[in-house]
Amino acid sequence: MKGRLTNLAVLQFGRFQKRFKLFPLDVHINSMYSAPMIRKELVAASAEPLILSLLARGESYGYAIIQEVKARSGGKLQWTDGMLYPVLHRMEQRGLIKARWGESETGRKRKYYSLKKDGKNAMEKHHEQWTMVHAVLSGLKKEQYV
Amino acid sequence: MFDLEQRIAEWRRQMQAAGIQPPARLDELEGHLRDDVQLQMKSGMDQERALEHAAAMIGRAEPLRAEFDRATHASGLRMMVRVLALLWLAGCLVSFTTVCREMFLSSGGFRATPFLLFNVIAQFIYLAGVLGGVLLFLGARSGTYVLRTVALLFVIACAAQVFDSGLGFGWRMWCIAVGGFSLFTIYFLHKFLAATPKLRPPRKAYV
Image (cartoon, rainbow over all chains, first blue to last red; front, side, top):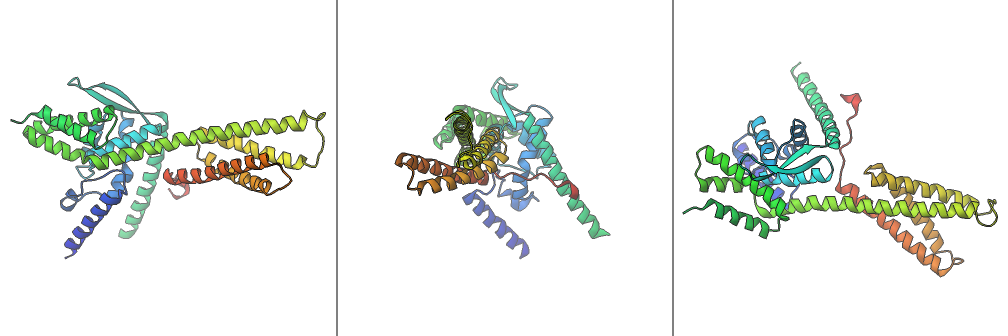
């Protein structure tokens, strides 16, 4: 009964999100029922810091970014792939990252993204904030087991 | 017979028909699609299923277009804010120099007139306007707060002059225009701040 109610709530939330588009990054609604996916709000909030952190390691492109995030999260962090590009576009407009057209291994055109100075600063801010949240949560969890 | 190139071209046309522009954006999405098709085929999928999977992962065209529109709208908003900042910067700078010239250069040099206090106050407001314009143009959020305060003071000053029947018709019309522009600035910057929320920096004391 509890499981059915949860599924129903998730389904309704998915419909609501589809209609009103609350979060910039979409996750695969259907797969949310089967695998223990990370919450939609968290996925959306983590998009920018993750992209910035990945680009801090070097130039990359959309598909590689998505694959890297999937691999590192064990498939739990999933975006609707196409939705990454508006986020990248927005970050480019804000001067956090820059883009250039290059060539893929097969000779096709490919857009590569890299970090700008403002992006580095934004990434450091994100890291501070996420570390703070993590520290608070860890502290509270430790207290529960004392 | 399944033709991968033809199906990809068809998918691209559908994306374009949904309003995803310009071609460079479609090129990037197509590149993503092809990368995914390639990866799925390497893992043993046939071409048709690989393409279906890749297209599904990219998602439907309409929400994607809406998301791109939102991103473009945000950048358009930033451009408008810069134009607004430049207008305020220019306007306040011209007003500041004009009042300076009137105070010190005209009518035989500096004199303590009954309007001196108003002029000095006005000069401080103009300087704040210049500062706000520069800050906003450089993208500092503090610029929005400074300019909104200056705009509010402009609205009050203009309203006072509009109702002063001793002033000429032309000047009162000018005050209405400036007051209206100031009101627009307050409204627009309020909308801009709401559309671009900023995460506050962490308070280190809690870490």
